[in-house]
Length: 118
Length: 419
Image (cartoon, rainbow over all chains, first blue to last red; front, side, top):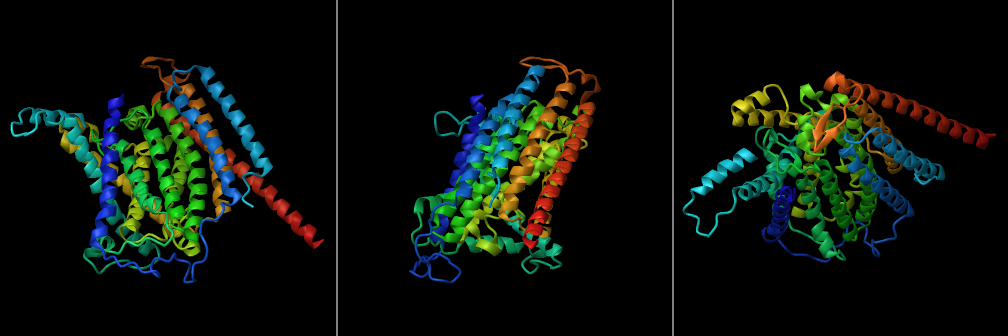
């Protein structure tokens, strides 16, 4: 029912208002005298050098890609879970096959070493 | 919510002092008030009460006293900290990306607050009973990751960037076991609505899901702990390695917003666990009392719900007080190689058991009864418990054989080096 989402919309607006107020009000409450030293980034007391934004190590890309695959599989599971009781035994077998294919890929990436960190 | 809305609607029907043409509908007023209560009431309160509670509990675990000077038991200390945060200077580091830097803390806090829309606090008190309730929780929770990433990337700080990398790896990895365990609950309950899930945990329908599905609960709770960045999964903050991770450059209220996000997320996880696995506001006498005197029944339900939430929050703080932090490879191994396959197998076996024991019914279409439906809710619960324990036993056997093999490989490698 679309009307069920009206409270969600209201809550989003109220929560966003809370975040905006909480971030804007201290702007006027606190002191403001930025200096060059104060706005240096923190590097354990050393003088910061260079830009902090480096290339992302490839491990993190691997995790992100694995997540994409698994998350899409999981999205297919949601509707199945809701109508599961209406389905006959075929529904169970079908999902068994689906998860078996998923697990085949999972074992493959495990054997290939995609889940190893080093 | 309906009784309150009808009461307010009757009240508003007789309003004569409203200056504008049409008075706003009662439902909208209630929802705005409830939203204000959650965002401006629960969120700051969670920060103040939970920081105080955490400092006290951790202090006791470490054989200290904790804050004890400001106010009785030192509880004013947290209030004083909150006021201090409000009046601190708000600094922005040089070279920071201003828009994401300012947006990040807000996103983190908002995403945590939004979860409360589908958590019933007491019988009849819920923001909105969505039919996709627990899917909504996963969806809303995952844009908190975006806030964390924005905060870490925009700070122009190397520690913050490392924290953001770790955030992506960790939060994203643990979302999968969490989602699958929630799907398991949806299969057993036959619905994703939180009210239906609570209804199905009545004693007549088989009782609390933590009894029926301990493994599902364990996977959900551990993955949830990782999602809330709580120790021992606090790699993205890791004070002793990368200072404070993604929020190292934040000061004043922005830092406080990150903390509000963390504590509200913690409260939301405890509330969800209580709702999904401990029956929410369910407890002795709540329903009888609610049918007789709704206000008293509601209050009793609220008391039960808060007791369950505090139990889970205590467990989380206990974890933090006793367990050392994971290393990142251990963390990802635990998520990908243990929790994910465990939750998948658990989903399949639970679905099988549900198919055997499901009662006949109608939900739009006729639902066929399972061959063992005669055993009722108690039969389903005990069968699910047995299947869960079986999955846990098989998982422990698999872990043992894998560990033996890897130990053997290490021994062989060592022997090869030495020989």
